[in-house]
Image (cartoon, each protein chain N blue to C red):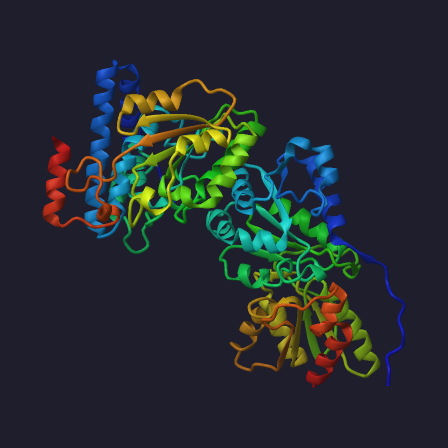
Length: 317
Length: 293
């Protein structure tokens, strides 16, 4: 039995929506500045630099300095969007993120560009699959992973106004539009498709794949709820508890290591309830990726719609 | 968050005025007395708490006293005043020296010092801006203060403000590479509104800096990174005052303040073991008596 063929939807690089929204906000609010590490092009800040040359602080290839400078700007009343490739922003400057941003409560918007395995063949040095695990261990730091361009724009608007330390994971790997024109609510999961046999809680690039998986599962008679977990910290625990009660099983899907990201966060809720439910965690399991394109690696690590569908059906009651 | 002590703040204002109005010798004497009072306060805090970084506290206190009683445009009763000068203690392990100084200015009541390092105290072993007014950013891990200060200086320039950013760095701390990332940025951007003061006591936790990972020639290093450099005696209050307030050119300024770790207490001076050793009751009284002379 095979699922019916669906035409491929248009896909988008979320960095474009990010930059457009940032420029629009910067026109209205002169406190908005961008800080980057030579990543003017890869963070899609060329247009920002052209329009606001004084408000782009490019510190060069120096991530610790970049995050510290961002903190200094935030503590002086500016709203800094600190942009760098996610592996270097989070890995190289982790202590600055902890001490200068989160512990100091300096309202910096850390923008992890091209996260997950977006850099494909460039290899594990350039992959950022550890970021969610590292950052979820830091108190007081919000973690937001938009699923598509609309949600990226909404999250940028929220972050500019939120005055709180936050990490925004901005996808480079192209994704279809899945959130319509829904607003973004920090800390809230959104149900993109209801269902009662099993829940797929997905984040970022996995959300569109989860929806695809759910559509295919429906053709096979399995009703899958799809939760868009666009905030990883703080987690929408109530959405998870409802999924437990109402669907009886949860699959998590993330383009990240499962060591401490979405899967671990959901599991921490599930196992501490009186009636835990079965779970599967899709992601990378403490492995460095082999050589391959992003699309290849997502297949390699069983992060396709078909893989999500299979995991969901296996758990469905 | 602790709150200001208006009476101490008023006394601080009077003393600042007296120091400003005094002739050089009287000015030197007033700053020396004030610094030694803070040394005594700091030693008693460390004795009470049973922990602290006494050597670095004593080496940095003439720098802190000169800044807070002679230089910084701050108001202890308005710690959030937007155009205040910014002061960052990058060598956050000498929090005791900072707390003694901030309390002497009235940023919070001196009685709070009794809680240093006690359970749930606002006065943690390293400073926390969320709880202690006058602390601008949380420090402790080394190599953090200069990048944040560069951000503050960039902000001051963007805002068109005349405020100045002062950051005190430990010398051993300069082995952290993040400082040199920030030093490049400050030099490249010609941040003339930034002054970094190096507490050059030549000792780090376990040994002499020059035996561990050599820093000299430190002045040449900063010059090569695009800074103006002044080398002064870090216990000469008038030399510090001059260095901190000299007209600025178009570059950031680095004041290398040559200091003695454990300064003011003969049996602690330039002794590596006094990095974070706690004095006994007898040593404490001996130290306090020496400082009162």
